[in-house]
Length: 489
Image (cartoon, rainbow, N blue to C red):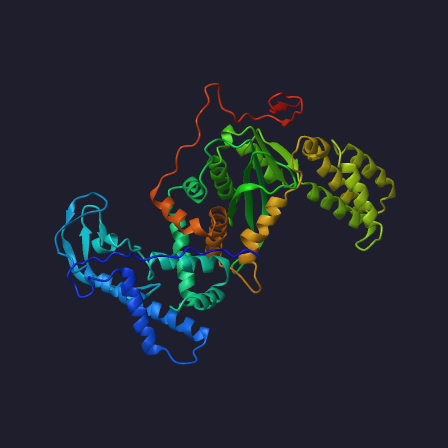
């Protein structure tokens, strides 16, 4: 097994020769002598590697804390002159001097004294020293520490996150601090310029429209304190140069909302706009039979190829079979096999004919209702069940990407044993998790801050011959020389 080589960090080998006590020593030599002296003072015979490693960690931590405090002291006191307002640019005098702020950093607690200014014109209070050091405007932790706490809080329960933090860092934190950090970042996300700005910061828009887009919405149930089980709507927008059912999707965007359909529509529209959906050659919309899915598709992407998820088509047939045969009837396996054979065609007509033949064997109203519901379901989704044609054209017929999203976007974090969410915190966590999975751990914290200060770039350009989003029923055409879509009658 190959080992990952960690690049060695090197210190400067040049001495400053600035006339100070250690001015003739370079950074590398200064650190070496310092480490040797501390090791000599604290070392003991028979020390194990664990002892040496612990000592090195403690010395490094003490050095970082002293260096941080010395760097802050080296800044010196503020001069007390008027400073420009960050909003209007006018000079604003000092209103209060030497206000102390305590906050935590990775190197330990830091105490900072600074002057407070208040602009009467803008009704804005600010601390120039905070801005000089790029300190967060609110909260009790530094930006670097907040980023790390947030990553722990996004991937585990708050109490567990605090315990896992203690394994990796020497500065202890509480589960309540993790909760406050996640809430603070959640409010920051709500104050972003727009959903589109968040999407573009989390995952940059492609330079050129992709040839394909897959859109797959679905619902996932979460337990809330106020209203019991509530549905969180989840959606995936994935790009790719080619779409093959067994291939992994390319750079998916995730959206999730614990709210109404209008909120979900706005979130999904932002993801589509970020992917330049107006200029994409082919969009595939996969969903279950819920009417709101197709209403959403017709509203946002009326030109998309709509496909009923094959597994949902089978599951609905199995629900009917259990009503007719019984929950534990051994014939259910044959029923499922036959249904799969019948619907894996260019239309569900053959399946509907055989289902109607079953009417002669129905003995109760429940049997008739089950058959009638399934036949109506297949007839309603007739054009979305051309599975043979979809496969031949290279289109996916399953919604595996959104089923997977349920697990790794929401359920792994929000459906742990015993978890119940307040609606407010649940709404924040749902949208944060979707953004976290879109941006990835390294980009997530930065993306939310970036969306606060950077408006979304305009992505849509109206074509000279009219809008692309025409409302018509379309199916894939294998004979089109450009692989484009042809309208169906």
